[in-house]
Image (cartoon, rainbow, N blue to C red; front, side, top):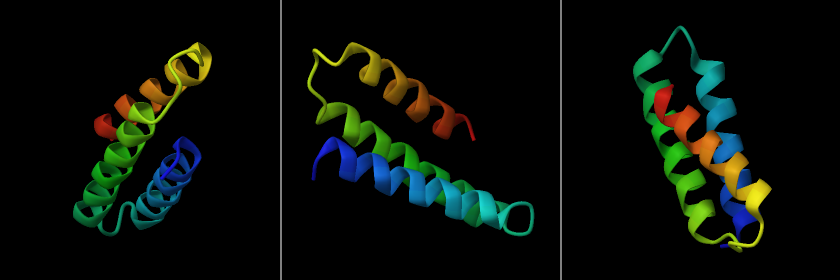
Length: 67
């Protein structure tokens, strides 16, 4: 999968997690973790010369782990 594929998957999972709150926080937490892993995979697939995209993706992954 490409950076865009991983990033899109991450966004979908995070949106699904957000929709579960506050009713099912345990499931939401699991989905946020999956989203964070997908975003981390996106980082590994990103061209290192894309510094701005790398920075935004790293911050996104950290924010998802925080959630």
